[in-house]
Structure formats: structure tokens, C-alpha cells
Image 1 (cartoon, rainbow, N blue to C red):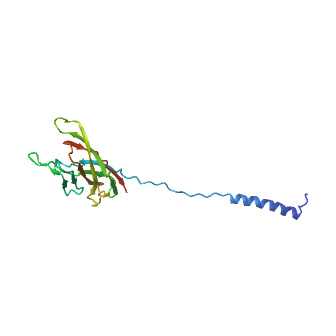
Image 2 (image 1 turned 45 degrees about the vertical axis):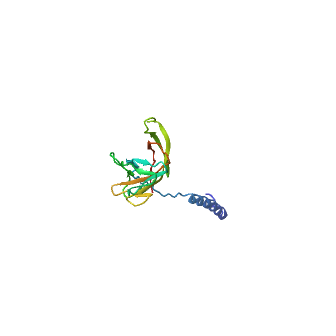
Image 3 (image 1 turned 90 degrees about the horizontal axis):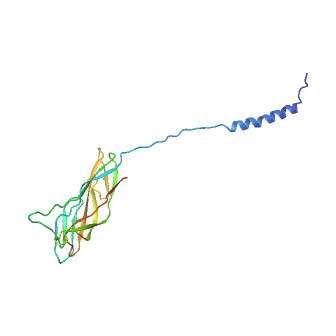
Length: 192
């Protein structure tokens, strides 16, 4: 039969076992779960319905002139030597550019146009017909969104549709060439 261990030896063995148990307990794990979410909305698109048209214009040879077509469709104004050309062919249509926006219903969006563009001209004179002439400027480009009455922000209706118009001012220097002028006006719409 074996002799019992002295009490001191048992205490030493217990003391060695306790630190191992404490180390195992502090290494336990914990976990949680999170979520990954996204909301996909209908893309915002814009399409041209009609162009900005300054109409048929005649110029007095003594001064510069301008034609301004208001973005809110309130009409055109003429200054300086610019006058609407009326005759057998009429004055020519004056109209704002119109755009249709499609996207997520009830969302707001911003509208951006440049402040100024250059209009290239093609001569209408019999001796130079079809040749390029000096460009003129279209400036003061402005926007009117009927949905908000704003110059910078529109709101899509319950079906995700809206329209807005763009107006501007055509600057005709003294002795502008008899020509057909046209310019490209980039329009950008962005969700707010």
C-alpha cells in the first residue's frame, strides 16, 4: 500500500491545475450577425422632346441684337437690331427645348446645363451657300421644371415621369452673316 502524499504536495498540485483552467476559460468565443442591405432604384434617364428654336430673324445693320426665349414658355424678346422675320413664310417658330425625365417615382433630381455654348453657322448667301461662317453665342441658358417651378430641381410624379424646358439668349453681333446656326446643348440630370 502506498503512503499518502503529504498535504503540501496536494496543495502544490491543486495550485498548478487552477491556472490552466483559468486560461481555458478566457479563450472562449463570441459571435454576432449583421446584415448586408441595398435598395435598387430605377435608373434616371433624360430624352429630348424638342429643340430650342430662336426662329427666323432679321438684323438691322446698325447694331448688335439678341433674341431671348424664356425657359418658362412665356415667349421671346428681341433687343437691339434683332427682329422677328415675318412675311409670307411667317415669323418662324420660336420654342423652348423640352426634355422628358424618367426614373423612380416621387424622387427629386437636379438639372444642369452649361451657361453658354457656341452656335456654328452655315452660310445661306447664294455666293457662299453651305460654307462655314463665324460662330455666334447662345448664353444665359436656363431651365424651368414645371413640377417644382424651379430652375435647378424637378420632381418625378407617381409614375416616375417629369418634363422640363430650356431657354436661352442668342447674341447676334453687328453684320452677322445670313446663315443657319446650330449648337449642341448638353443636359445632365442627377438624383438628389
